[in-house]
Length: 200
Image (cartoon, rainbow, N blue to C red; front, side, top):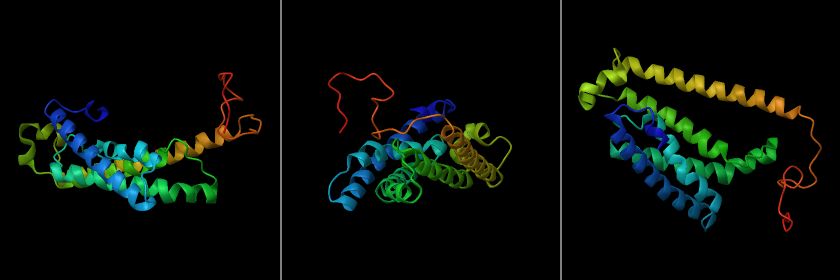
């Protein structure tokens, strides 16, 4: 998992366990919420929101969340993600014309925000005895009460950087010389496609 790439040696096992638990809860929550909202499973939910737990646990993956914490993070992320796909995406499309075809907002944005908030909570609740000799690798010379504000700062910097980068990118892309597409979401105008390709 990407979550374990930067983890210290002792933390990689926690990354595997926390990520697996969070993804498992995310899968369960996605199937439950999808069936509850639509009466049937929606493939957009299943393909995307099942991964929300992996995104949300990222900040706290190598920390002591306890199994219940990892499960709760994954479950909550999946519920928020399915809610976003079912209600928020159509609302954004109707009101501001936002076409989130890749599910960036619901799979990475909101679960990433949940991950940032869970990181703050896990760091604030940390106890030195849980980490043993590796405590200084995680907290350096700080106590949990002085370390968690840095999680808040990091979350705010990341959030506003993402908003600013999105606005700048949107402004630049909107100025590219393009002709209006005759058929939306069709690749024929810009890509080589097979002869038997037909747009629905």
